[in-house]
Length: 333
Image (cartoon, rainbow, N blue to C red):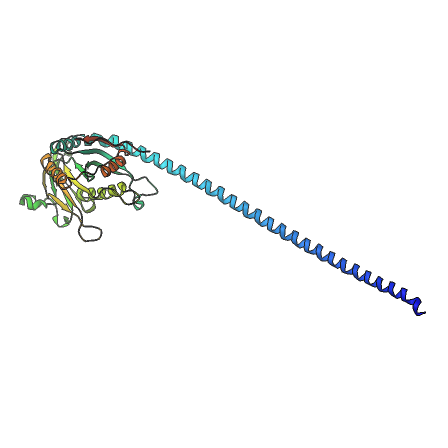
């Protein structure tokens, strides 16, 4: 009996094992399918994330490219507007500066200057604080004399007539002038012009009136030309801060006015420790003395620095005259 049951017991045990194996295999298959489904969902999520990030990066790149194109077009339009404004200023300004240019040229020939004379220089200041987004701002210089030492002289030309007082109060010239104006406001840099003006009275008859014009503080000719000289120095400096070691300034009263001036106007520096001075000259002789002094004090030639300054100024559309043995350098791309 017992021997007959053994095969059945073995078969039953095997059947149980088979059932257990089937159950285990099905469970493993279910786990594998679940893991595969999880992997596919993770892959889909990662793919979607990558595609979204790619779209965002592409959109950002396209937006930045479009922004740069717009900025480049705006810059190009501004450059064209600046260039046209510079040409317009050059056309209009040259008419007024021809006489003073001839005088400066003759003075330089008499002194024996080697260098270049630029007339009616127009440029956009480097300092962004001086550039208004709502309008284009350019600086205009009457004359810029570049010496072979690399030193630069900025000349502000004033074709004033009548009587001119620059740095000197009228009452100190003659007591008869003490009632021209209230002199208490004449401090620091200032210039006063007194000129005759023809007007019509109520009967349409011509009358002659004395007109008094005061330019003081930042509006004075000396302060204006010093500011222009600072702008030019920044404009001429390269990225490493190199450029002319010094930019000198002068006011030239080239008109037929009777001028009473201080020969030098010394301004205050931004640090308050004393500033640069501006020469005030009233005729060709005084101008020649000024140029002679500058040439003697800066007698060592520096062709590389001179050429660098000249190249920068040549691009501003100014009228250019070479002086002495100096020859213009080749322009670089």
